[in-house]
Structure formats: C-alpha cells, structure tokens
Length: 317
Ligand code: HEC
Ligand code: HEC
Image 1: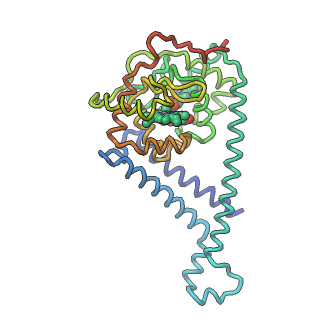
Image 2: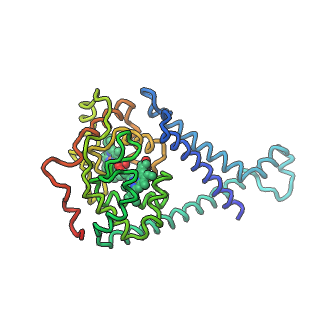
Image 3: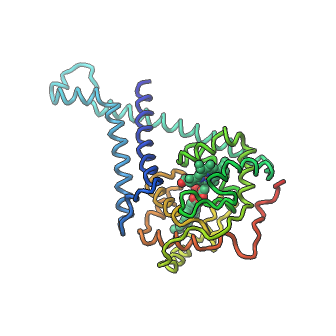
C-alpha cells in the first residue's frame, strides 16, 4: 500500500514539526505568541501553517504523478490521453481512502486506551508500591511532587487520582505529547494498570511544600474575576478540580507551566484537550492568560482546613 505508507510518513513529518515547535518552547525560547494582543492571531496562523504544511506534504507524496502529468500535458492533450484519470478525481479518491484509514487507526487507538483505563480502574491501589514507583518520578517532580518553580516540571502532588491516571495513559497513547513523559509513562516504567493506579494514589496524597512559581502580581484581581466567570463551573470555586469528572486541580500550579499549557492547547500541541476547551482558551488575550495563570498560582494547593485525604482516597490499601 504505497499510499498508506506515504501518508503515515507525511503525518509523522507534520507531527515532528509540531513537536519541534513545542520543544523550542521547553528549551526556554520565547513563544512565538509572546506579543501583547497577538495570542489568537499567532495561534490561528500556527494552526494554519501546520495544516497547510500537512496538505503540501500529502499532496507532494500522493498526487505528484498525476499533477506532473497534468502540468506537462495541459488542457486538450491530457484529455486525449486514454485511461488517464483526471488528477482531481485521482487525488479525491486517494484522499477519501486515507481518511478512512486514519479513522480506523484512531478507533483502534481509542479502544486500546479504553481497555487500559478499565484495567487501571479495576486495580485496588497500594500506596507502598506506589511509593516505590514514584522514586523514578521524584527525580524530576521532587519527593513531594512539587515540580520546579520555573514551571518546566509541573506540580503533581495533591492531584486527583483520576486526573493523574488519565494523563499518564494519554502520554502513553499519543494523546499528550512530551518526550520525557512519554518515556516515563511507558510500560517499561509503569508495567501494568495496577502500577498506574498505585503511583496515582501515591501522588494524590502528597502535599507539595512552599509557594508555586508565580507571575508579576499585577493583575491577580482581573484573573480572579475571569476565573470565576469562565472556569470555576468546571474547575471549582477554589480551583480544586473534580475527581469524578477527571477535571484537574489547578490551584497552586506553577505560573509558567499553566501559561505553557494554555499556548500548547491553543496551538494544537495538547490533543487531549476537548475542542470546546481549546476554543474557550483561544478567546483569551495575552493579558487574560497571564492574569488567570498568576491568580491560580497563588491559590493554596489544597483548601485550608481540609486534609489531603479526601474521599477519592477511599479504597486505597
Ligand atoms: C525527566 C523528568 C520527568 C520524570 C522522570 C517524570 N516526569 Fe512527569 N512530567 C515531566 C514534565 C516536564 C512534565 C510536563 C510535560 C508537558 O508539558 O506535557 C510532566 C508531566 C507530568 C504529568 C501531567 C501533570 C499535569 O498537571 O497534567 C503527570 C501526571 C506526571 N508528569 C507524572 C509522572 C509520573 C507518575 C512519573 C514517574 C513514573 C513522572 N511523571 C516522571 C517530567 C518528568
Ligand atoms: C467544561 C469544563 C471546563 C471549563 C469551563 C474549563 N475547563 Fe480547564 N479543563 C477541563 C478538563 C476536563 C481538563 C482536563 C483535560 C485533559 O484531560 O487533559 C481541563 C484542563 C485544564 C488545564 C490543564 C491542567 C494541567 O494540569 O495540565 C488547565 C490549565 C485548565 N484546564 C485551565 C482552565 C481555565 C483557565 C479555564 C477558564 C478560562 C478552564 N480551564 C475552563 C474542564 C474545563
């Protein structure tokens, strides 16, 4: 199947381009969307740039013979050639075959991810084994799951079990892209559903110490207002998230990490975000993003007076 092969190559090439852009940001280079007021424009042009690159790649790989014939033999001369399909028709047929192929691959990926999630949910977590698995994770995330204040490594301590499990499986199943995490979430490090459940339960009961990395503090009130209006219905009044709906706790998360997630989601580098969520974030201007990230980074990671052991810890051995 030469067409399937060239399609896979094209898709891979597109993906590695998108990844390279993400990696540039992780290396601390200024995001291309860094100018005041330019968030949406830049995001849109990145998305368009990505898809036109993909279209070009697909076209180059697929339709070269037909298009070349068309260029060499324009108009009536082409029509006189027997048994040569018109290029548009040729491309359209291949394009629809490719769409069908991609759709069936996506269905397969989703079903294996769902199977694995079911396996994780069946496991009864064991904190001691979780602590053992977490030793690898602590090298980057810190022994209390606090991450780094520059936001390169997120806070995960105190995150809901369901959220940690979902994110780990998303890294595993190509729904979230980060080379380091794809490596550490793989089956070599977390062998089965039980291991994922164990480490998630261990992470949930951690309580990171010290404040998160914060923003300038200039627009915290504006951030609070924006959050209350557009985000609190899902993430909760205190940004504590929701175990039952796998909505992340975002209170007390590092400012720079939050900013990066917003840009990554809008630029198409975080495929596990729903299209509605991406649209919501794409409506925010540069200043809004700074304000809401700064506000969230200053909230206590956990609600004062509540211990870390909430009901989601029930069933943990
Ligand atoms: C080499 C450093 C490194 C190691 C080791 C590591 N992580 Fe990570 N982790 C990261 C980075 C960097 C990110 C952010 C990646 C991104 O932007 O998607 C991350 C993100 C995450 C997230 C998503 C957090 C969120 O708020 O959505 C989870 C969950 C996580 N790691 C769990 C783990 C677990 C469990 C282990 C051990 C099995 C582990 N990590 C090992 C660097 C590491
Ligand atoms: C309709 C419900 C909903 C609304 C409204 C919503 N979110 Fe989310 N948010 C989610 C869910 C679900 C996820 C988890 C996505 C995934 O699985 O990766 C998420 C993920 C996130 C993350 C990634 C957290 C991490 O640890 O990586 C951030 C940051 C975030 N949301 C911020 C916001 C902000 C800011 C707003 C308001 C402008 C908002 N959300 C509005 C449901 C919502």
